[in-house]
Amino acid sequence: MRPAAPLWVLLPALIVLPLLALLPGISHGGGWELVGQFAAAALRPSLDPIVLGSVLGGLAVTAGMALLGWAGSLVLGLVLGIASSRVVWRTCYGSAAPASWIRRLLAIPRSIHELLWGLLLLQVVGLQPVVAVVAIAIPFGALVARVVSDLLDALPTASLEALRCGGSPAPTALFTALGPPLLPQVISYSGYRLECALRSATLLGVFGLGGLGTELRLTLQSLAFNELWSGLWLLLAVMLLLEALMGWLRRRWSMPARLGLSQRGVGSQGQEMVAGAMALLPVLVMVAWRLEVQPATLLQWQGLPPLGAADWGAVAALPWPSLIGNTLLLTLVAAALAVGLAPLLLLLATPWPAAGALVRGLWALGRLWPPPLTALLLLFVLQPGVLTGALALAFHNLGILGRLLLEAAETSGGNKEQALLAAGVGPRLALLYGRFSGLARPYLAYGAYRADVILRESVVVGLVGATGLGSQLLEALSSFAGDQLLALVLAYALLTLLGEDLSDRARQWLLETPHGDGHPQEAGGTWR
Image (cartoon, rainbow, N blue to C red):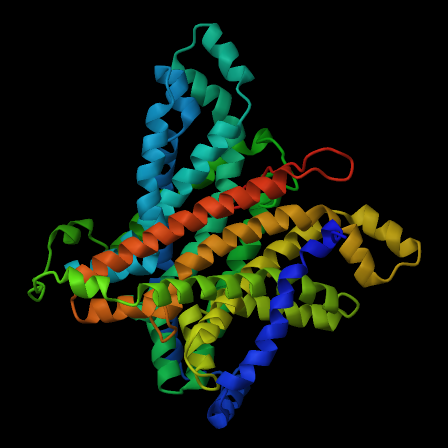
């Protein structure tokens, strides 16, 4: 018998059972005292003026890099998204074939994680503020382009065809017919990407590109936990304020939710949206000036150590099955944990407000805490390997998925849940069958996308000790083995493109699977 749809969201959590059996074999007791000191330091962060000044300076650099990288990705994404839209090419030139080729080309920069872009640019142009900005802008821009083109191609074209039949030029007809319904969806998605950019800028700092991430890693490595928590609490405050601002704007401007639970038009807020975007321009100019971001430095390549002759035999002799297998295993375990634990924890905490607040706090920490630092913390009590890296990635993505699920649950299924409660059903079952019944397929569809993201992110924990392609990448970068580096980057790109295709198919199947009433589930929204 197939389980009911609401139970689908809990099935991935079954991965916990074998993990509980495996964890004792990779654990060691030497670091529990350090873990206790780390947890206790959360209640007494350092308030030393010198520490706070350093943390605030690093936070300002991280926020500035995130803002500039995000803005650059939006410009790139809008331009390339329009250029890769089938409806645009079909309207302007009568054929959508060029759109398909542009989409295929954009898949390459999109498949390479921003950390790899940052480390590669760091080797070429040195430590420059512009490196982190460009490292964020390139993959984010390619991802935004994909979303914009998908949104454009999914919009109704009746008004566009009417304008074309009335003699309007193609650009004017496209802007008039598709611009207003596209605007709220793009702005809603761009707000989410700004949150992602802040996390990415912190991550890049962990690997030496400046900002608060560098401060966090140095304090963790020196076991200065009180100073570490000073940075974490400030970063958490900024992230929560940003999330609250994005939520307020989403409600004020009637923007669609990410799980497709609301689809409203632009209304009368279009002018306010445009005005807000224009007000950002002087802010971006000032931030670039203060951070001394100079794009011209990208053309000033520094001298690199001489690369040896390519040894493709040694490249072929790498343990490719093990590297690829460990990377895929890490991805699957982390994805199952993140997708399955979010609804499970929400269900367990439902009857008790204090438990719900604790779960929300845990998710907030997961979102802001970079996975490499989580991996380093886990190494205090666990041996390095696939499971340690998977737990680090799962904790981070659990925070993201938990927040998304909570937002969606708060805006859907309330009447059905209240009816079940009035009929005497317990609060957990009412939540499961009242709210989760309508969220199961969209949530799992988003979970399929997060699995694709986790595959890209596996390079992050691979670079700090987890086995897989990421650890081999670190060796290739440190030894300037250009042949191995090229092969490993290509392997990552191929794996992520394959994962992207599989996750697309899974989402399509989930969102088109009929409900009990025989009608297909509406996809809607911007789930990426």
